[in-house]
Structures are given as C-alpha cells and as structure tokens.
Image (tube, rainbow, N blue to C red):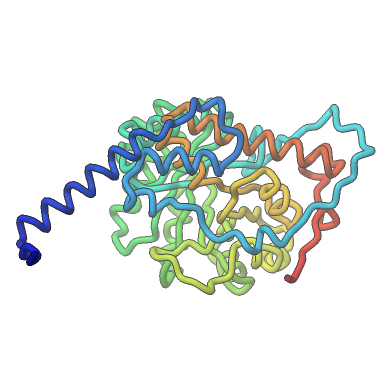
Length: 333
C-alpha cells in the first residue's frame, strides 16, 4: 500500500492533535494542595504542570553543583530554644535574611502577577524586590504589600525614564534601589543616579573583587553577587563560588548579598557562613506563584525559612551574627 502524501493540512492536523494530547496529559496530572508540599523541588514540579513548556523553561531550576559541594558541620549539643534569626539591613529589621528576588512581567506565570507576589511575600514577612519591568505599576504593587519593598532597575541610557521610575518607587516608600548590571557599565550614569535618590543604592551582578571595588568607588551601599545574564551560558562561575572573594574585597564596608540557585534553607546558611548578609530567592517564588498564586509564594518562602531555622539549630547557631566559615566545608570534587 502506498503512503499518503504529507500535505500542509495533514501536517497541521497531526501537530494540533499532539498539542491537544499534551495539554490533556498535563491536565490529568494531579496538582497537590499547597500545604502538602515540603520542598522547593515539589513546587517546581507543580509549576511545570501549570505552565506551557516554553514559559516554564524560563524559570526551570538552574545549576547547583557548587552549592552541593558545600556541606555543613553539625554541632548539636547547643541550646537553640532562644533562636533569633532577624537581621538588619540598611537600617531595616528583617524577619529573616531571605528576600524575594526580582522577576519581570510576572503575569506570564499567574494572572495576578506582582500583586499576588506582594501579598505572598508579605504573608511570609519577607522583603520583596519589585522588578522595574513589572506587569503592574509600582503603585498597585505597593498597595498590596505589608512588608518593605525594594525596587529593581536595569541600568539604561534613558536617564529620564530611570529618574521617573526611581521617583515613583521612592514615593511608594521603597527602601532600596537595586540596579542590575548585565552588560557594560556607564559609571558616570550610575554615580549620577546615586546622587539623585534618597535610598540606598545596591548593585546586582557583581562577580569579581575588582567589580566590587569599582562599585564601592561609585558610591554603592550594597552589592548582590549574581551571575545573571540574559541567556544561560555554560561554564560561568556560580555566585557562591565568587562570594568569598567579593566579601573579602569589600572588608565589611558595605553589605554583600547573594542571588543564584538558592533552593533550600541550607543554601541560605552556606551563603551567610561565607559572608553574605542576606540572599535573594527568585525562581522558587515564581514556582509558588505559578502553581498557587499568593498562597504558593507564602508557602515556598516559609518552607525555606523553616529549613534555614532547622539547619541553624543543627549547626548550633542561635543568631545570624554567630555564623562564620567554620560552619561549612567546601569539597573540591
């Protein structure tokens, strides 16, 4: 029997049949109640069930090899009943040193986008860093928040646009400006921006001691070690690998934060033990948002908070200020 010719109509029919079957398959997979999930990996799986493959690929889990090479040193014979995990950053007292990191255009993942993210972060008592490229105006997002907000901005050549955005953020009560550096930096624009604002300037995207030193000379009051790039590039050092060098370079002059692959409470502990003052959690927060809205954001942040408290107790540390490098061991292989 001769095969039928493959026409355009026949090819399209086959394609849409495949798409329909894929959607039906995803719909048949049960999404568990949010209170049944116990770790970030389960939230990632729940988000994958809710999002199409291309959208999910944007927030899929990232490389964790460097973090997994670090282990904790337990010390159990310490009374940890009076544990205090609050921390102070830029004059703000934070419930824990865990912030919800900035992600742009959150309506891609949930209809309420940043509004639900703000409610969820507030319920978990976490600071939210609002992306400049948000689905909603900063005024609407701020109206949903019950905990402090930071504002994130990409360094742009359009001075008027940057100034307008920062003015609106300050008017809404944002407590810090987080400027993301992903390409070449015009340091004169950055210095001009710093002089025009009435809140701390934090630079995100620092990946070397030299960059840290230059940022300090430009007047940065905080740094975020982050290897953010518009596209994933293999072979790039992870944030946790360069964190100690950046911390050493600034010598306590400014606060150093870390962003990148934080999925567990133990990751938070490792970063703080290596000198970070706080960490940003971005992708896991989006997983919670995509799967469950504001409740999912609250739940995933609280899961990581609880893990962090448990691991602090396991290591015999009752406050963030007590952490140092003796808590961790870095394995080369």
